[in-house]
Image (cartoon, rainbow, N blue to C red; front, top):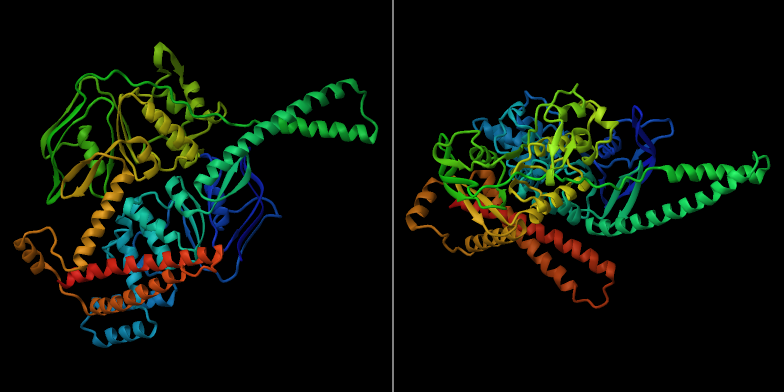
Length: 628
């Protein structure tokens, strides 16, 4: 079933043509990602598909299937700053959502018994209890807890998470997402992956998260040279098929150039063409000349800047502590960095990772303890916020304000303009104002300014946000060869696995543990630990606490509300039904007459049931803990 049709889609900005006469369709169940270099027009194409931008020309066509629920997430969501989170979350016209809103408001005023009873009755009539449980789960997954908080007080990342939660609560059939994993921590990303794998959803998105592309998408669309190239399969399939296409394109171009050479000799020998055949051949020659003169941009971003010499003393933290009132960020952290260290920093959003970096670079003072920086250390600090660049400043002037030349290895040097070319800024684009750059191009420019400081200790805070996959691959290759120290905060799992060899894991309450291994290894161990704790709790085994602590914890636990008691009862019934359904589906696999399609459908259904059991068990455990 066709969900979206795009035909004759053209868009340009001034003399720059982003794409021309594009055409593609999206069928129900397809999960498509658009990939391209920064500035090629990914977000613009996504905005056109979402109806938020207008293509050029009268023949352009954008057509959605009627009566499907569409959800759109852009990088900069718009809210009313004066609204509370609750008002934004429940702003939908959906009857179920409005019923839950009335119920939540009634709970805030239990003295009005009639209103509460009406709300309970309507919840029962619409069978809204499961939906309410789902709604609360989504909010908790994205760490949205204070529903009375004003939206205007939220950070940009918090607003992005609110927009995503609001979107998923409405349960759209077709999702259009621009960089959905930005500002999400690891747990949120992995949960969103599982959610989007649901076979019933249709998806069109832009993302740089390669594990996300690998695990969620079943088609990749590449925007290159103003045209679309479609690849069935996930990210691995895309890489394999794109590599083959590049080989074929290079061979085709070589053959066309040979043909052009022969045709050029014929043209030069001929008088001015008058016959129909001769004129047709001349026209073909000019078309061929235009095709072979198109620049095939296969350049790679080459980073040749070499860090300065590292002395014997690098960076040391001694009994480092930092607190804000009762909130502990770092508690008695001790570490001595060695030459060539490559450390990843991981932990939930808001736990203090960026504060930790600012402590190490002495941008903020510790509560106690000290940081010792070696005399040869030159930090290169790439922050999430970037640098303040005047929008009316040209790209070349941004770089020249830092230095006219940058030193390279073996005593060589490179001019600001040459360095910009290495960063894929053509001479013509170097004269463009910063305000005209895409988000990814601004990030690339910012990265360049950091490296121009010739650092030997690189600190990168979310460096992968808004960078295209090509730039990410080359940045990774540069970092692998970088001779200095690396300290990286990132939620990009692919990037972390490729670059770092051990982790600083923030566990909360100031605890930072050094884990020897990459991110994927850590997550496997972490999930095993969580599952063991859940099984132990479910089986009634005591947690690893003393009896005294258990008693204190138990005495402090709040009692279940009326609604939570009902939810707990319903969860027990639902889990029992789902487990029975899981057994039935598992039994069906024993049928030897099953076709490949049958097995595929059963596998999807079994996966959905298993995910539902996991989610409901997780919520059941939360309520059991509250129950005490």
